[in-house]
Length: 246
Image (cartoon, rainbow, N blue to C red; front, side, top):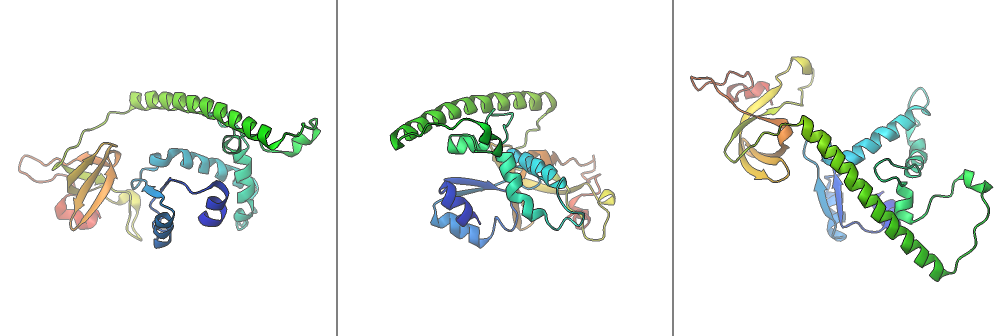
């Protein structure tokens, strides 16, 4: 679908950002990005904020679908294209433009537009110049609005956040988001570890050594490992109990 419905319509992207779902990490996607020289970035595990704009749009699309699905919910796929069109032709608060307008340089032709007076036809040169002018102005205003929106979001986040600094060789435990089959998540250990940090990245992400494996985690998922005075871990999710926490 990416090749036939996205690449052929909008062109080949220089960079794409996805989560680490099996479909996105498959050999097919690797082959496509290699062929088209596209850089593939992935989010860190259990940190949807990495791709927050997309996650927010998914919530809107799900709310749309809830109003039209049949009771058995088996016809959701028949509404996807219409839900996307509705979303792409609605003005977004962060840009004050519709996504459709930012991509194509003009508003989508909707049924309500039928009552408007006919517009004069342009020559190709007039159309290209007009489109370039609209795109330049739209992108300039959109960038300013996005910058302002991100600044306000950062201010709000900074007021409530208290970041913890991590460095190489620190021992940390990880908030356990996974639960073994047939086990109650509420009764399962909330932490697992300890593990050693082997790399620290500037985007609040670290790489830890988990036995023979290595994994990247956002710092929101970690806390420093603390042992008691005798050198024992008071937390039930210590290395000696790792079988109950992994």
